[in-house]
Image (cartoon, rainbow, N blue to C red; front, side):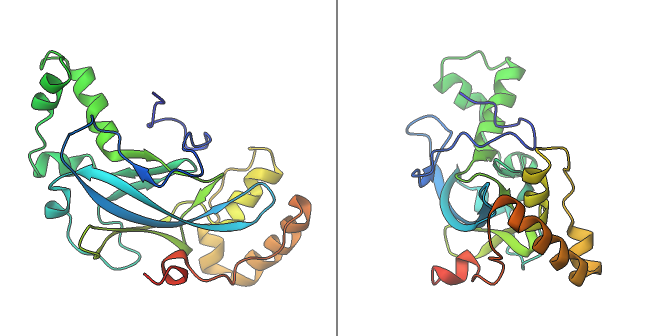
Length: 213
């Protein structure tokens, strides 16, 4: 199984056609959360995506409702996917010892316990390069449909393009540029898009709007 805590810029291991992501053992109680987000492919095309991530049952009880711009239960959004806050597992009294016993492991095995805590909260998701910015926020909805997580300080559209064009040498997010000098940000997009063979897709509707959510 892939290490989901890996490098920020590693490719995702998720299959593009996969819709539901559950890293816990079969039969372990979970709840379905809905993720809406944008990805950028190597041609510079924006792609809206949706996925269901299965967090441990009870996670929603310790994660309050938020507004867009507030991270809530999201820890990070990486090129490869999503990490939710492991600290909330303690608040919901996630019984990792019982999970270890369920899998036939010694409850004193701290390394294995950490592994399962990461499995419970780290998700590779479909897409070439997942972005999460003020312009293209990553949104995570609890099973009751309320927004419980949003992430806006990951990589921007420009950040993904710069990474592709530079073959990984440029790893900046360009969030500050989008906030402080929108005109220069647009100029940079206009410069880089022809390099990768794409066109400006920034006027597309956000995935949660396009889906009717």
